[in-house]
Length: 497
Image 1 (cartoon, helix red, strand yellow):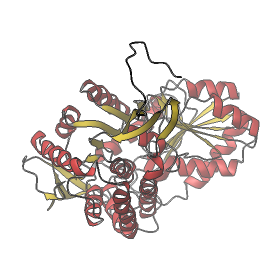
Image 2: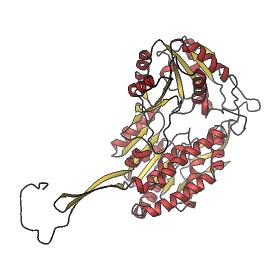
Image 3: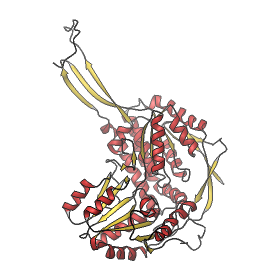
Image 4: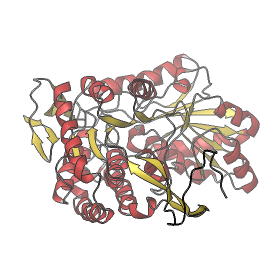
């Protein structure tokens, strides 16, 4: 069985802790690899490599950094098929979805290629007699990223390209369930000319996570994952003096007004709820149907849902793949039966679904629940699977109150032909990312990604301008080059004249 190792100091490093985790093919349910789990000492080795590399990389020219990043962008683009295959083999998502993930990661590499523009700084001259003031941004040092299983390539690329472009060095701890894509990204970075130690990858579990959060030489930590873990990452990291951005979970609502194009809304609900088997923090998991829209909308969703093709991610005919583990599959299924017990109508029951020839895979079909209420577990919890709930309300005001009462505020969408209603919604809804007739409003690379409330812990969103600010710190330099005729002693408080 293949054993996956770490990447430290510019080369593969075998794990020595003696602890390993299984890596499954979700479509078959078969363990095909194992991954070495790092001890605290192995995390320390990666941090030492990053700290040593920072001495040169942190003072390297912007021209040198961007030349590496442009080459890196070229290599990732050339290997996008290979990276997508690694994602499908370990995550299970269909190949087209995996390719899309790589494409969205490439956007941030492209953003990082433009780092000279982002780090230009500001200058004010003659603020006082022969006094100039400059505002500059400098790198932090060694920074780290802890990334989730659902986007094995995209989320790491949301972090480290921008971090190293700003002059930092990086320690990445990918999900132990899907380690191969991150390792490949590190290999390609070395091939692009990134100096040894600037990017390091350590695999592991909570031991590795805690070693990162507690390490005195790590200045900042980025995290994407569930809300409970995000809260833990933020609390523990900040207690250890680190800058932390921790993106948590979500319960994203899609509001459908009576004037909406119901065919567009139904297509969008299918795509946003069931794409990647619902294992997205930006998935739409609740449709809020206003007035008489619910019945026709549910009919259109069901009509489309019945035609979806579920199967192995490497089969071009498949539109949705399996879930990541059997345990998660069973947990998702429990919400469907639980909703029925609590009074919801199960319009489509996807539990018990299997694929011929792949009976041991982590399969579940899509589920559609109607007459869901806020008291039900299927509404209250982040299911992270292909389960779509429909909540019926009478008015827009009732809908906005329902949505704003959610503890999460990651993403949301409204479907309407009324520009005034859409504008009101985007101002009133309490969420960090809003789509108007766009079901998955993930911002492009030069805007920042992040939610509100329990969907984000920390002050900075990820990538975009927020990402640059997170991976740098500001410094203001006040300079006076006195004229030779200046002089004398003045003990008074300096004034600007």
